[in-house]
Image (cartoon, rainbow, N blue to C red; front, side):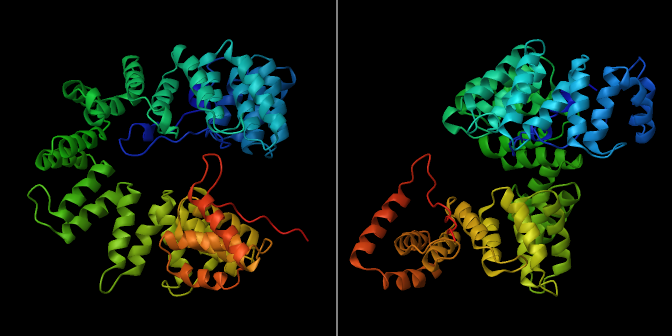
Amino acid sequence: MTAKALLLALAFATVTSTVAPAAVSLGASSPAAVPSVPEGPAKAAMDAYREGRHTAGVELAKPLAEKGNADALFLLGFAAETGQGLPASRDAALENYKKAAAAGHKDATYRRALILLNSKEEKDRQEARESLESAAKTDPANAGRILGEAFLRGLLSEKPDFNKAAQWWTSASEAGDTPAILLLARLYEGAFGFKDKADAKKSLDLYKKAAALGDENALIPLGSRLLNGEEKLRDEKEGREWLQKAVEKKQFAAYLALGDFEENVKKDDKAALAQYQKGAEEKQPDCLLRVAGFHLEGKAGLEKSEEKGREWLDKAAEAGSPLAGLELASRISKDEKPDLLAAYKYLLSSANAGLPVAQNELGLLYVSGNLGLSDPAAGVAWFTAAAKAGHAAAQNNLATLYERGMGVPVDYNNAGQLYSLAANQGHAAATTGLARLHAAGLGTAQDLPKAWALASLAVDRGDADAKTLLGDITSKLDEKQLADAKKQLEDLKKPQADKPAAEAPKEEKK
């Protein structure tokens, strides 16, 4: 297995989707297997390890590592990093990788850099940067791709750095690294943020470059954008050709792109349904979901049917569509006599698939007690998962549990941080929650003018509960405080680009 596959096998399953943006995958998680060694002293050790005989592989590697064998040292580093064959030890992994890298093992350089990049210590991350920049002199493809991602995630800079990411990915792409070309394409279409720097033409050209170099992961995004992208860049004939090549490679999400073209660009629902059905025949989850939608809405001449729609939703959920499971759970819960266990099954599947909306809904289900008994601790777990993904409603719900001490000890500071995160996404109830903490001095010094400003903002955002709170706060303000509060409200309504609309309360010093 090459360093490319071992280290940064980015989630190109999502790159090929026409719906979801690709995730950047530089993480601390370890790969499932070590690379094989075709020949050499460490071959037996590597083979044993790859076969699952981890301890045996390590024992075979130890005497070779003592003699400075690079492959054996890498294996010991990998075993220490993963805890398979050796006790898990970050220090041991770093030490063995360092020795392996010094002995010329390129993958060891990258494994070590990945560990250091995920460190909380700035000096560790800068050490990783230095080693990667050195590696980039002889291996610009792999080292450049990793550096680009590190800068994009803000691991080597104060905040995500578009220009540095583009610089390093360009360097990697010029070395012929097609994953870097695809990442650049995604970067320039705004998939990683930086919408102001989006360049659809440059993105399309990069997809074409990757496809021309034979990267099959470029086929669907290229074909889709030629059909469904900016009007001035569309080319129906060429787009269909690339998508046909994708179908020939059994990339059946191509039917989704073709169907979307017929439905949204050509405005031909029957032709769209025909394409979605082709994908559905291959159990392509998104195509199954589209067919379900056509039955539920009665489109393309189909009879509107809740029953058939649910049948197709079930097929889509079985094929791995978390959105289908979420939709089924929602519809079941609205039945006259809802089967909550069935709804729970679909919701759990969608939540386990990492869908934040489903995780939040599952958290609500646990807290509500509708399954029989209320389980706030389980609710906390699911709200936390969704909150980490930036889901505003989950952040607000989790903050509420911290404020009330449900499933977790009361923690007003945590509540304030979470309310702030949600409020900065425009969540009305979270804005009220933040106002409530400032008004009562919970987790922070009491600040009635700030509380008034936040409560007023919450009212503007549509939270009815904020009206009562606002009235209560108003009755406690003198003229000077009210003038200050109104000024703060004006500031909140015109947030600066580098300043959040609603800051979390600062914990009061004892």
